[in-house]
Image (cartoon, rainbow, N blue to C red; front, top):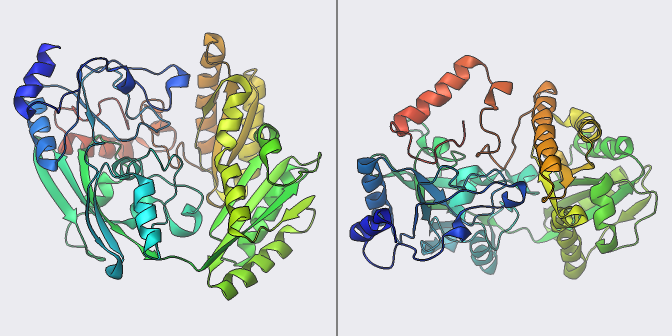
Length: 455
């Protein structure tokens, strides 16, 4: 064990510093893109007070800290690229308080997303954020990236459901902003700054979450089209109608081809674009809205499927959740971005993704949260082929330029992390970037919180 780890044992006591191999903490979900670090030590605190002792020690010794939740991020945010101490929050998994009659929950940062959703569901409530990997991702990580998901279209990303945050900031202070209250404009929105900060301003240790009564019924409708043009026109018709859908998703091209065999119905051979739209509410409200969705999606559809039973609905969403894995399986890996564009430029972004793939000699496709204009634009690669990986990263930079040229953003829900460092200049002017850096310097004057990320 290194001298640094032994010093941390003296600070935290036995059982909080990971012994043996630390390779499991060297990467996150970006490992197939060749991104790995080398942590100097890994600590597993069990309370905010222990996190404060870690931060205080790090600030005295000028040691970088890399917070880590479930390790499911797609931007390299939890990778200790330049070493430092990884702060694994998985042991902070207490539900501190759950008040179903008041629609609220108070949790440690390490509580799994699936745990929060399950507890809410068992009491007739809903925690709407539904990012991928819910069985592994943790609430603290979801807040740190302001994670989204299909139902962010109606309900918003994670931050919309966080009424308070507990965090440890430099040089080792515990702060609590917000709480079990629904309204608070007493000071600057520090809670809002911590949401989406990717561990660069402090380490989130707990959160107060807002819940709502679960809808009585959810009813999705899936429609297949023979072209991007027809599919995007159908999506725009949903918004133009004034119907408030809970989710509006799309899958196109190679992504649809890769997952075709698992779709819970026989897809027509000519299908090139698939839309999934879902409505929710009371039984009467959902049924009426689902009928309207069917009417909106019917023109030019090759297939229209409207599952009604719980099993059929679950099967459709399981298929949608598996699209990413199906794409990865085609060549063993992928480089996938999460760009955002105005909805009326969705078709341009999809076509642009495929053109960029052609330019760099890579097979390309996209899927994602159509209602939000959020694409997972993707390039298929063999992760063992260094040249393909290099070209895919070049293509990703071209995607960032495409998104901003279309009036969009380089990230909608994954954050900047390490992979998109130094790209803010594409969408922000110099004054905004200086303000961004000034906020970082105020919270973290030594630059020890997740260095190199969110820049």
